[in-house]
Length: 463
Image (cartoon, rainbow, N blue to C red; front, side, top):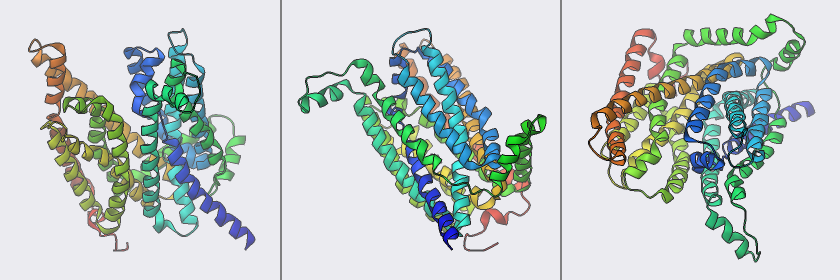
């Protein structure tokens, strides 16, 4: 009984640590000033674009292999690895001096590669460990509740970090604090630039011991890790790829899971492409830049409502109903964006921000419910890969669209005016692009899925 109680306590601890991991891992105080912080360090716009491309490529290349390694070596090892990489990625920016130097770009290159590897390692492994823990406790039905609670906590944490991150980057605010406390001291500008990085580095340092306290649950993971630690030669190198092929074969054979991933790609890629451009949209609808951080914080708080709504949808409605419901919300939002209504147009942007959270919630719920433990992290990594590829495709198409529209407006106005005209015109393509993807997915599902009842089955009906 004592051993059982100890194991159960460890499993409960995993669930608490999963929530804390998500909160601390997403506590990125530099998010509200992400672009200008990189530039204030001394990077050029070209270097910034190169670094973001490196970051995206790193995630794409490492996403699925990381999921396979989580299934082979154990989820905890990958989560700890992600936390270590977060410490390194922030530590290098704390260390590197501000201003032009021969190694500034290379320091940020290390940061972006470590960040991409960390994102890939964490993606899927943390969810798989949390779901395995609930399953071992006989409480897998609580998964939707846990996702809701986690989303709520992450939303509050993200709201807080957005506000604090924007405030500590404001020199006037930071300089006023010592005076209010009675100190005759003015922080150096270099310190102010680094404050969001320093705060995030502290979060990473707290995160690492949280991950070290996790308990491995995946059946045989520890034994497999022992075998692999002694293995030598090509067989050991090929094991992750065998795991990937097995998980891919399983996913193709289970069409419901495949189409959950594809539905997530369709909804998320279009919504996320707009979110990347959101600050330009706010500027076009006459919202002052000083409000951008507060808007982002408000969008984060909406995650609490989104989580409650998502839990209701997955527990009360069929997967097809949920896909149609989310598609309708996104289509209304994208159509409203094309109107470019001053100030109030921000309400239509809510649909895109909400979509990312609801897609993450529902795809996580369905995938974890359907996939066996041996392939869970790998299949979840397929979802991460699909979302990144979807965003990459949308970005490429958007770049081509912008070039085409800009050619039409050449010479029609001053450069600033052309940029705004081109951006507004590009918004017209968002609802059309989404409708094409939406219809293609429905046709594919109709043609490739024999038992279509899996999409229309009510949650209350047992298999």
